[in-house]
Length: 381
Ligand SMILES: Nc1ncnc2c1ncn2[C@@H]1O[C@H](COP(=O)(O)OP(=O)(O)OP(=O)(O)O)[C@@H](O)[C@H]1O
Ligand SMILES: [Mg+2]
Image 1: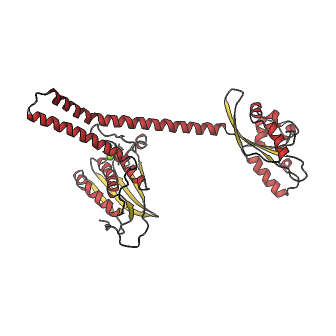
Image 2 (image 1 turned 180 degrees about the vertical axis):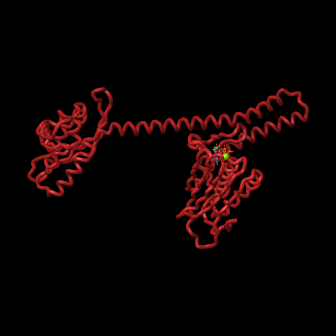
Image 3 (image 1 turned 45 degrees about the horizontal axis):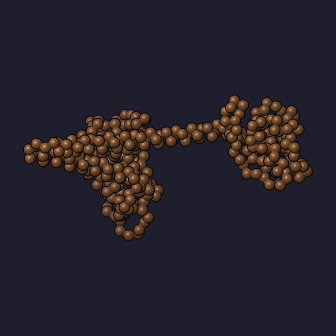
């Protein structure tokens, strides 16, 4: 059968090669004459209709394709138009109802193909893309559901976090309104109103950090090495108290990035703090800075309890926390993520239960200014 596919006028080796290609393609390919009769068909098509090339040669292609497809795509009219005008049509996607009333989706293309001495021929390429389309629809739907669920969780988190401070402020205000309080009690109530409002405000401030800042903040040339040293100093005491060995490895070179100091220091601090909190009974905390290609890479690695696979997927969700209620807001990693990506970098977390956690920040290095280095780095202590 492969020999039958070779069109006249082609060199044998090229024809052989095309044969192999046609037979291997996971789509139906038919060579048709002006009347839509089958001149050649590849293995995929023949396998589909369960016939040999000899059996279908000279028969109408339209009788061997899904009727609804032939009608909806108007294949017969398009073939006529193709021979009339000579202009091949671009590929088209068509969906139609199959026999079991299920929707099927095909991609097809009609191309004029008339090699010398072979008369008028057209090539019909057909691909059943129903499964791929369904899969991508399913993926899109799953992603949409995931986004909605994340948004729902986020809103619930905001509501939950704001409710407590507002309740404190409002109950204290109620007491003031009811009257009959001693001056000391009044002062205490006013303090609670103020604390409640300040707490709510701090939550709103934190939320604002999740979105790109409206007022552009001053970026400066920063040393990532110095940044890690500063952030480490904030957790040093806590680490010592918990019996954690803090192993810092920072290069001599400062590794300069353009950025907002506070925001990046906070981000690295959040990673270090999580690492410390993961090792209540001590362990090793390695904090390193390295140059890798055009990036400065900060790695914070702990030997703590690690993160379960279903949890690791959610660690960047705002308000997601596994810690006891009231202790943490679950904003550390989401704010760090917003800060790092806001600097054109990436933040990833790799972990598994019982095997510690590695958080990696990659930041694009600033172009070499050929001048003085920003802040000095520190060598390995
Ligand atoms: N190094 C780590 N080891 C183990 N679990 C971690 C680590 N880092 C993050 N996690 C998990 O990810 C969750 C989310 O971390 P994230 O820093 O965003 O919030 P949090 O630490 O719970 O609260 P916050 O940072 O606002 O005080 C944590 O509750 C914890 O379950
Ligand atoms: Mg945290």
